Length: 111
Image 1 (cartoon, rainbow, N blue to C red):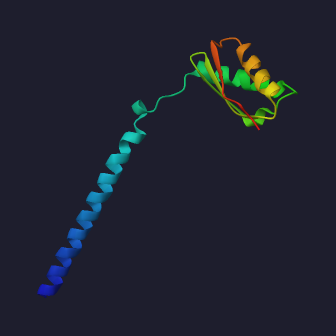
Image 2 (image 1 turned 60 degrees about the vertical axis):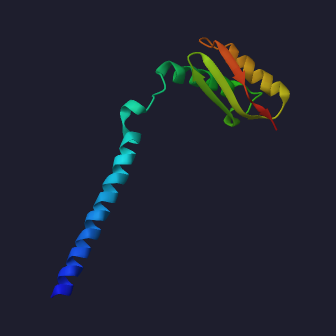
């Protein structure tokens, strides 16, 4: 009888401890889900990146699938791969000639 009581109390302690651990883990993750901490990309930046990507796709000289376009307040970053130096230059020119672009950082790598 005493052993059953001790086992019951130990089991209860482990349940409380487990519940505490789950609450602590969830509390730590709550900050990650807070909408105030998530910085949304402004609509204009997304539109600008999409305009540039569309122009890259339209170009017959480029394989746009391997080119990634990031835009932030008119600043554009091109990353990824192209086959030739001429393609690297062309991608940069296409980005620079797009309305709304202030500066282009061309980080495309030639394979």
